[in-house]
Amino acid sequence: MKKVLIANRGEIACRVIRGCHDLGLAAVAVYSAADAEAKHVAEADEALPIGPAPAKESYLVAENVLAAARASGADAVHPGYGFLAENDDFASAVSDAGLIWIGPRPETIAAMGDKERARQLAHGAGLPIVPGSARFLPGDLAGLAEAGSEIGYPLLVKASAGGGGIGMRRVDDAAALADTVEATQNLAGKAFGNDAVYLEKYIERPRHVEIQVFGFGDGHAVHFFERECSIQRRFQKIVEETPSPSISEATRVGMAEAAVALASQERYRGAGTVEFIMDEAGDYYFLEMNTRIQVEHPVTEMITGQDLVGLQLRLARGDDLTSLAQDTIRAEGHAIECRVYAENPDKNFLPSPGPLERFEPPAAADGIRVDTGVRQGDTVTYFYDPMIAKLIAHGADRAAAIQKMLAALEAFRVEGIVTNIPFLRRVVAHDAFRAGATHTGFVEQHKAALLAG
Image (tube, rainbow, N blue to C red; front, side, top):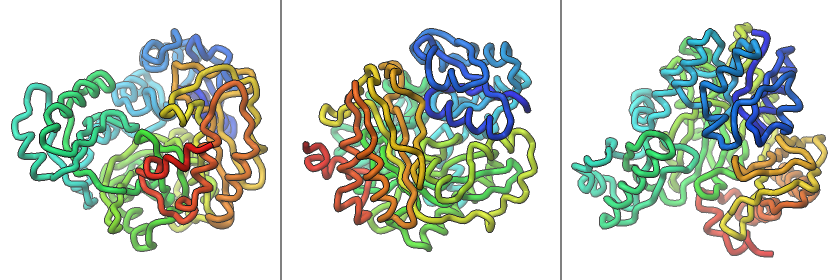
């Protein structure tokens, strides 16, 4: 393996390019018409166009990405996250083209991408799962009322192929169930090409805790501890940290062992994340498995000193990783990540595209890391996710990490567009956050204070 094509854009493309260069690998970027002058294009060894600005005409077109891989002479493809990263057909097409797919086997992606199937596999591996139903297809809602009654209200209607908070709706009573199911089926069909949905018990004030795993493809896997990702808006994470401030050591060990059991059962290959939801009593349930690198992987890298992207590349290259044993993986200190978005929290987090007249992140030093895919002078477009940077702070303990994060957010200078930086400062400075009293409804609960000013 000598040359890797990165089938992505933005900060994750820049992150993978950096990982390739660290290992002496050439990196090939792809770009849409809107990204011709983008940071990831400039940092790659070479770059090829793949279509017009809309993702559905460029980054989501597998044939275009594969044509770029062949034209560049790349011998491997790294998908990053989002776009085609969890598309089993694309993973198969890469392998069928004689290229190395830097990710789990296509059948693993397919199994974990089907949320109902993933629940069954997790249950088979001994993981606790949230009470739920079988899938419901359009035109066939037989047994829906009975399933809703058995699970109890409130409940969630979830797209079987959903992710990122898309295709997930709460239902508070039986009268609204059928209409919500039909509306979610319609949305899921458009968003994922799969209109099946299922019902799942709604857990009040849950915490979102996940385990980073790495599998070797032979039934052996290790974990890199947990991340808490409970601070969310519109079911999407905006602040992540490790270790979790909320779980006991026994729960931490149990979650990690459960995640490794699932990865081992599936003979998982590469980096993946097993996500759990935890109720107020401290009981946890399997939520889903993401078969890719996560947006929030830097906090894990900060506390463990491990290079997760580098491990992905080394495994794909065939390096000997036998020295990576569970007892060699240790964690030190505390790390927090804030996702910096070009959006306006005061207008329901509406995206705020425009020119970056000024873009000056804090210096990357003394426990501060900045991952970004933009530079001063770039234009943030409305075509893609509005995240413009990830700011990560590492300290000896959680209090130190919070203080470093607040100072870094204060030093972050962006002009020309509206960002969520002031909002993030108020989140991290909030007494409830400092106390570790976080849950997925945190933003909604404290909205008045967080949107003040």
